[in-house]
Length: 181
Image (cartoon, rainbow, N blue to C red; front, side):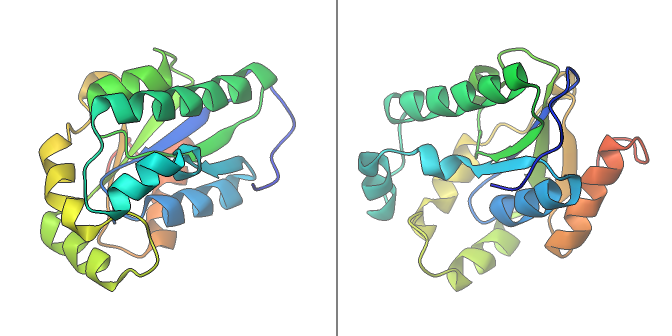
């Protein structure tokens, strides 16, 4: 985890979401570092059975995801209650999953890393040592429900280098950009 700022009542949590291979962990870590906020990768909340299932090329179902999402939601809530701003990574592909994670709080801001299948497939082909099988990319895109305007997401394309993407997100938080791309 990255060091974080002093606890405040206006703390917020950024939920960095997108399909596997979109750069969530890299971009989120850069955002957290830039802001001096706590950081955690939601993958660390997966139980060993989920990791084994994904590594074998099998998509998780909602029953598999429920305890994982609940653990991440608890972590988010604890940060907010402690007045600590933070950044968390989670695929959060469906609206229902994001609803579990945000619990309707405007203090949890969604950052959607948007990219096309061709670009992401190329990245996954080059990635080694990750438990998420590249065979699951099609199921990820089939599951994906992009955040709607009512979720007030910061939507950023992923074609640029991670540092540029992270700076765009920080600019949106600072009010220097309208909230997308």
